[in-house]
Amino acid sequence: MSQAQQSALTRQRVRSAWTFLAPMLVILFCVAGWPLMRTIWFSFTDATIDTMRSGNKFIGLENYFGEYGLFATGKALIQDKWGSAISNTLIFSLISVTLETILGTIVALVLNAEFKGRAIVRAAVLVPWAIPTIVSAKMWGWMMNDQFGVLNHILGYIGVAPQAWVADPHLALFSVVLVDVWKTTAFMALLILAALQMLPKDCYEAAEVDGIHPVKVFFKVTLPLIKPALMVAVIFRLLDALRVFDLIYVLTSNSEETITMSGYVRQEMIDNANVGFGSAAATVLFLIIGACTIAYMKFSKLKVD
Image (cartoon, rainbow, N blue to C red; front, side, top):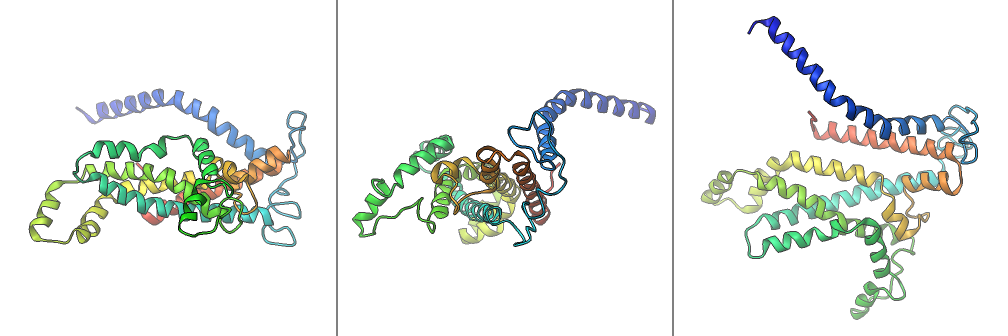
């Protein structure tokens, strides 16, 4: 085949690819691109729920910076409640994703081993992940109730005083992380288990013949081989954790100690009807998630083809 024919074939393939991609791109723009651009536009206006349709005044960066903005308020570098929302979100994401990664890896290693009843155990592990988040949060809310919750009832048998798990400011964020780890560890385990199933058996047979300790085999062989899948699992969970809302809203009703950036956005846009200000917070949330994703991919050298 001549070079001209190859070029024509390449152009034809490119046109075919764009033809198939075009409907998906149009749908993606309608359901994601347009709402995002509209949110960014509202963040530069004084829009409220009442004035969204009747016209809004362009106010530039006042929702972001200045006395009534999110940053550089004149009294502080960042607005107090918005700062708490960012801090809570980052702490929640860091602790929950770290614990879920470690526990998910352990669970995946156990499920990858050969033992009787493995299929039943695998199905049982996925139950927390299969339960809707709202249901999980409500269920744990009852279990953690300081008056009649089963958790305090169990602790009473070993002499531990009842705790206000979701009402105590010192325990509320810890309780939320606990519930999230219980629910989402199964997701991490599932992804890591899929990577473990693809590993070559000859490496482990050679290590066993050489008498290498299993812990050393894990760090020297298994971990490097499953690293790409592990990185993908972590970034999925990180993105999910950074925009957490429903779990915390149901468990603690967005109290000051646990409010996240998504909860803050919802509070400003719905409860306070400040669509413009809430849109500015939503835009900052979008930028933070994007920055965390890029930084993580850069740091982990994860390549997306």
